[in-house]
Length: 393
Image (cartoon, rainbow, N blue to C red):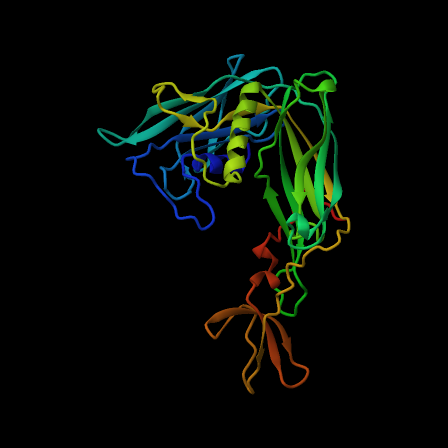
């Protein structure tokens, strides 16, 4: 389901607060903590992830609280069991060669363990969490992934006139095997900082996972076709389109119950903003507690066929906003006999500056300063590690 699901479900029992509105936490006593279980297996090879955590009480800080030392396995309708191992705290992985199969049904099983020290150190099961069986439905390939330029006008609410980009998707299923779809995506783009004398890192790549809910039912549509599905909108204020941009979209098959789950979350998002905003009420998933039916479990275990498609965008977009337009913010003249400092932070007048340029050719000697580290170090907005899948023009 992606990393954002556990962040969403952690926040799911928190009051909606945004902007500068004063937070109001009603005095309703102690709020329960919920277990949050989210996981996704697909028909593609590789490790599949299950995350287990606790949600936080109403008004608490939004932090991921992992649940460790769980016994986690996946069972199927052929009575096969697939054990998961804990890779990092609260994150459990299948083996590399595990892959689901369309037409089969899968269940997630979690034993919450607790260590006891008396009379000896032992681990005991305190709760057993189980998902309802989930059938993996087939999913068709993505027919096409493409983009169109969009004219941005100030009268439409955009700060700067120019051009943005809208990414669309077409898909079809002549066999009508897939009735419900879900999509997510991964964005990757090149970050190129200015070439100043004191630049530390210039070339980086930024990677962002989608934070949107994007589901659709086709049971009521003709010809089982989806055309011009909006995937991503990029304004001219983003740095995504400045150099080279890549988006990879994943298309999943889901069942009706999961479609309803995501649709309910989507309706709440329309009121609260995005997946990282605070959610006013829990949304039930497909997990339950075997030993305590009254204990509500948040999150969803998914079993989906998956197809992916990626495109690169290298086009020219008019009116892109330069994120480095305000880098040169101040100038400091060199005192006679004083050396120039190394690249880093320079304190002056109670502020901290990054030295981006120096003049040693003629008097008076001076340094050009910036308060923005991103002007000399692209790792502020990315990583110098080139992704394995990245292709240059």
